[in-house]
Image (cartoon, rainbow, N blue to C red; front, top):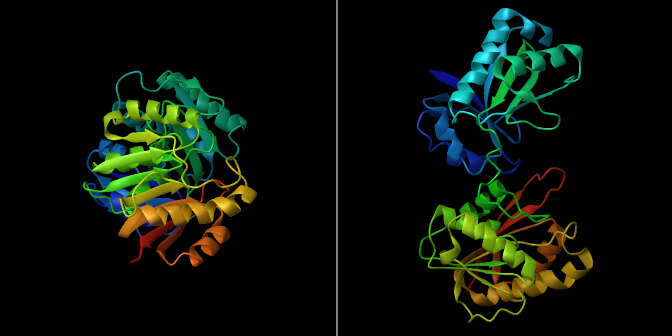
Length: 342
């Protein structure tokens, strides 16, 4: 049996997400037509999609040839919607889904309120007010020939990481961190340094791809380091990482001792300020160049695009191999992929 699938990804990372999705047996991808969305047909178990790490959420989709949502209240269409929901529920242990949420224009209308109520009663789910384990989306079909019902395959977005037991404001989301780790071209023999490691997101996503010869995180904030230790423990990675309270601009490391540098640089929004970044960025990039071996890599993300470009222009030790603009819900940082020259 085949299913129509819609994969939601961070806009700007579609090609990386497609490359990951192509490794799933039975998944046939359609050409990209919309930022942040990958459409596909799945021939095989939908559970194979649960392991995608570069995506936000995955939905199963069915188009209903109806003129308006009211028709979903009819017996035939309603039973088809319930069948979709029951199929998704069977993918998980009993009791996984407790609440229901409908995302749609006009979700507060009497018709859609009745629709939610009928589904809740049929499946024994409470109606969520802001979110729910069982998430349903309703929208007009792209060709306006009917209405699409989309059901999320998992009770939480795939972007939600089970290891994140300690969260900090401004922490990098999992899919973007995974993408940065992929862009670093990870090898098991890498000596990896994550400057300003915060809650440990980049280190964890990097080590979940493959091991490293050495993985170091540093941050001057003791609260951040404590948070990182908790997340590393939840991910089962505590013994594979070293954390230190080092200043990223004065690292106690030998020159050319690191293969890969990763960093989620302060944007000046939730963390840091533009004024401090004017001094921080050039100093941090110069110090990262010192400790990185020739031919080594750095993958950095920042909203301070012009400052990054000005700083890198003064540092011939770094060559910019790639820039990716990412949509983080109204913020548009860039991922800089750098190569150490020399």
